[in-house]
Length: 461
Image (tube, rainbow, N blue to C red):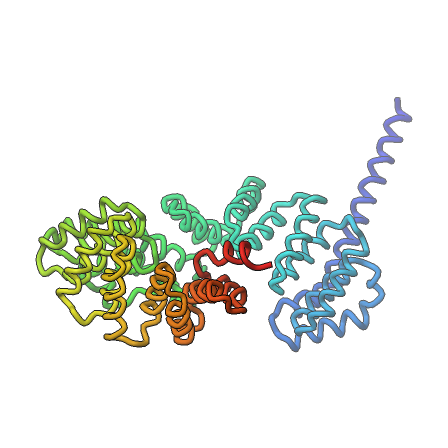
C-alpha cells in the first residue's frame, strides 16, 4: 500500500511537469509572434511590411508550421500581396489537413477578398473538423453577405447556443430580424449589442432603423444622432427638421419613406395613424390605397381610391390613373377605360393616359379605338417608345406585320434596352421571313422581354 502511494505521487509529478512544459511552450510560441501580430493588426502598411520581414528573417525557421504561414498570409494580405497571402494560407492548410484553425483562417481570408465560395468551403471544413462557435459565426457572416439570410440566422443561432456572443453578431442578427419584420425580437437583440459595446456606432444606426420602422420616431432620431456622433456616416438619414417637427410631420415622413422603399405593410400602419389624425385628407387615403394595390389587396385599394375622391382636395388625375391600372390588373377592362377616360378629361395632353386606355381597348378587342389612342399618344410625344411598342403588338395581332416591324424597330432604336420591343420585332420578322429574329429574341431575353425564353425554345435552335 505504501509503495502504491509513492508511485501515485511520482505519476502526479510527471503529469504536472508535462502540463507545465506544454504551457511554457505555448507561452514561448505566443510571445514569439506577439510583435508580428501587433504589427499586422495595427492597420499600417509599413508595420505589415515590417511583420513580413520579421517572418522572412528571424522566424523563417518556423516555416514548417501552419501557424507561421497563417501569420504570413495575414501580413501579406495587409500589404496587398494577395497572391502571396493565398499561397501562404494554402501552405498552412497543407501542413496539417486536420487543422481546423487553418481552414477557419483560410475562410476568413477569402471572405476579406470577397471570394465567398472559397470562404464557405474552408469554413465548412473547419466546422467538420471542430464545430467551434466562432466558426459558425463567421460562416453566418458570409451567408449574410450573400443574402442567404436563413442560413446566416441558423449559424448565428448555433453560435449563440454555444455561449458565443459579440456585439457584431447581435448587430448582424438584429438586422436580419428587422428584414423579416420581426421588430420586437430585433430590438431585444440590438440592445444586447449596445450593452456589450456602448460605443458601437453601427448598432445605434441599426436600432434607429428598427425604431423608425415601428414609428418610435423620437427614439429613432436620438439613435441616429448618436450613431453620427460616433463617426458612422452611413447611419439612417432623418432630416433635423423632421426630428424637430410635429407628430404629423414625423409620421408623414416615415410612412412616405416606407412607401417609396416598398415597405408597404409598414407604410399602411403610418397612413392609418395619419388618417385617424386627419380623417378628411384625401392624400393619405390615396397613398394607403396605393400600398394596398402594391400588396395586391385590390378590394381595399379600390375602396381607398373611391373614398379619396370624396375627401378634401383630391388629386383626381392621380386617383383616376391609379384606378385605371388597378382595374386593368384585375381584368376589369371596361372600368379601366372609364377611369382612364376621366384621366384624359382632366388632362387631354397626357400622352401616357392614351396608352393606358389603348391597352384596355385592345384587351376588349376594340382595335380601332386602341389604335386611335396609340396614335394620339404618339402625336403628343413622337418619341414615346412604349406607345410604339404597344402599337406594334396591336399591328402584329391584326396581321399587319410590316407595320409591326417598323414600329418595333423604332421603339428599340429609341430605347435599346426595351425588351418588349425586341419580342415584337422578332415575331414580326419571323412572320415576314426576315432572318435575324432569333437575335431579337435573345436581346429580348437579355432585357427581360415577356415570353422571350419560350420564343427562343420554340423557334431558335
